[in-house]
Length: 328
Image (tube, rainbow, N blue to C red; front, side):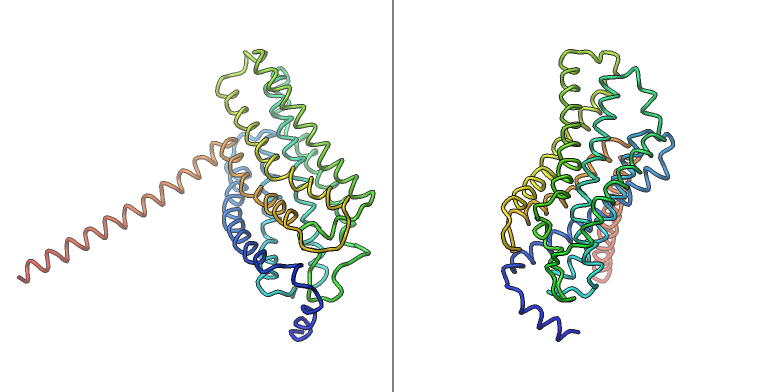
């Protein structure tokens, strides 16, 4: 098998995976995996186990954390591929990892759109505030978007123009280049899973800003208003940085066509999209006081350990000095 993989590697040009890209991917994905795993496990535990009063936002946050964990747990397989230069996990798993590149941003954008609509209800329509506590509707919305995203992503598992001609490569995982065919499914996915949630967020944000400027939400508490504004700013930055460049690049690659080769813009925008799994910590911190307390407790505990180590070091040095003086 090893000799077969070594022979197959020579069948593909080096420009599919430049050495600089492999090194950058290993470093980047290692950081994303370490930070994202800790952050999202903590968030999922806080929202599911320690939050007493659940609202629609906590339901959306639980889904965001679960989605991030699913994506993050697949990163070690990418790192093995970039490190070894061949794919030892089989063709089926290669197809699954490649499909997740499209699955993650599709469902993530809809979850962010749900959160935006929730903030619209809290600020612009405070008389319908009871709906924010109706978690059954939020659960149904999340289940529905998971099912629709799975249904639209499943065809990627059965690509008829498979770029991998042998079991030791996984070119389907080469960012979004192998998914750029101009077909009805891809354009439908761009419209329904990118433009539609994006327009929903733009509509919610513009209405909220208009309401804030004209003071139509005077009944809203200052703390609630400040919290909503911070959530809105975080969502806008995250969408503009992580998801808009990725989908614009995806559209250009589909329209341009051409050969399956390394594209720096595609690699960079894919890195930005993966960065969203760590940027979600800002949302968790703003939304949940329990998450804030957990993060603060971890930081305080680390400071406590540092202070204990310093005190033990000082006491040990003082003892050694006293022993030296007694011997003299």
